[in-house]
Length: 210
Image (cartoon, rainbow, N blue to C red; front, side, top):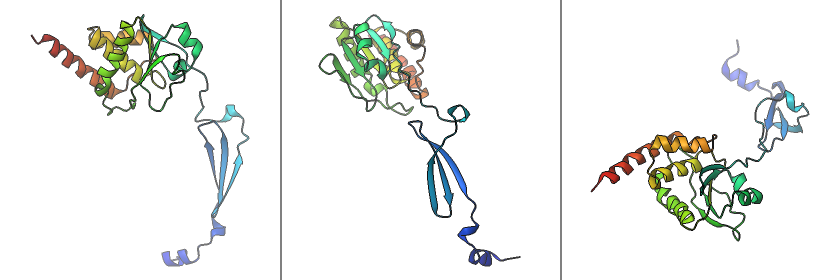
């Protein structure tokens, strides 16, 4: 039986087995990385798509717009970037609460960007007043505002819920139900839900003050 020292001394790279790793990039490109010793070879993976498991990029556009109130719409960045969709819904104002998403028609619509990270520990309530003021401004000007984030699932619906609670006097449950009815894909992250529930408590407390 060899000692550990003898095994290390007798080690040879030529005895290493070939290792293959299949990699799928964010763009959907598939490659095979083959390692032999310290050498790596990269080739395109020719396996048919239907035989591959794992990440499948979604290249379809989400142009669904949820109508919460006649002047308050919710959607994804796709809807915000599609001129025909904006015109179809008579949008005049766009509230961009995504992070790193540009406003593509600055000369045609009134924009406001409030960058919010879609993370449970992000401070949503820090931005609520700013967002609600802009939505109320659009309403006062008899306009229509589209609130959007990246996918229209967490941040935009959360802002919509906060507006309904703050400016429409709705309870958290009622606001959540209305937003989900308008845009079924709505699913604020758990941290945002907890903050909105506490926001309900704060709003109720302030309303009861003389």
